[in-house]
Image (cartoon, rainbow, N blue to C red; front, side):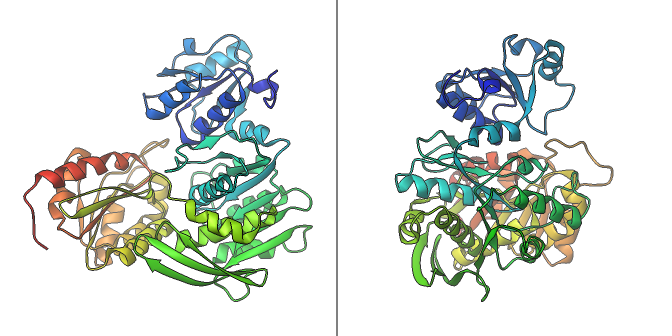
Length: 469
């Protein structure tokens, strides 16, 4: 058995290997020397990157893709029971391992930081990965999105720290035992798996209880769901470090100054004042950076060094990522798909837009989320100057009768928003480009394939007649 590889992970087969979470685990195993194989629905840059690490990646799902000598089959909650490779695994008696169990096994013997919360996990995990790398600590990390730098969603590092995004959507974050856990916020989401806020709180309490003896919970002081969680874990043998703008925060943010697509943050930590740059816009990203700072300090990293290293973070793909500029119009990609995220990104863009307008090309994500939060999504879109709304991206869900993007459109119009419905995704780039004028910002927004439309919008802008403001 190769060093650092659990026996079940010596020859793993990943179903859906190109997914953000799955590919990260596969990359780390390949870098540790495992014989990694897997399949994905379509060809991608991720699949090619995995092949570059020595992995065997099949396109499409077929029973024959699974080798007889595979040591395990790794799945996520999105893989259905009738997947032919999963069926063959059962026939061959090959153990099936959930993605979260595989990730938990990779953390064994290291010092894990697990980043949880309804929003901001990928950004905060990325900030930690980049800043700790900048300081020469060589962390391992597994992130739900690709970094602008160092250019990957995962890495096997030589250091003792492992930074991981901890997913609450299917309760898989209960599998981890972190030395430091971050909880950024606690809100109702993932309606297919949680029926109430009480279930959400119970789930986060279970996660907090997984923190190792003598470990630390870093948690937001400003968000009510997080404050409630802080109350619920009181009295446990656990160090709790709160952060935020609240007067009672242990790590207190005293100033956030917007500087275009960046910001400058000042905090008081352990009685000392620190000011550092955050190279992404918006108050919520500043809070993410302070959470990362508090977590690193809990592991013993000097606050001043980590604060300066956080300035090396330049962003994550799809998190307010500038895709380009054409005809005086900037096109920015936003992964926001929950109303809180949408509001935060639109407020950040308003601060950065100056006199320009904000135009949004929005694709709702999941029928269940739209059914429960459609009105709130519409309210969020009212913060834009105009929006184009596409049909719902189903992802893993089947349609729900009566649930369409019209729920969002009606709510947005009721809130006074200028909204256009476009049912043919192929027509949307021309529609949004036709609305734009020099100085405007166009956001492609959503967790689905709306991200693919940004380059097409730029192409449309570059070829249409120049418009005056």
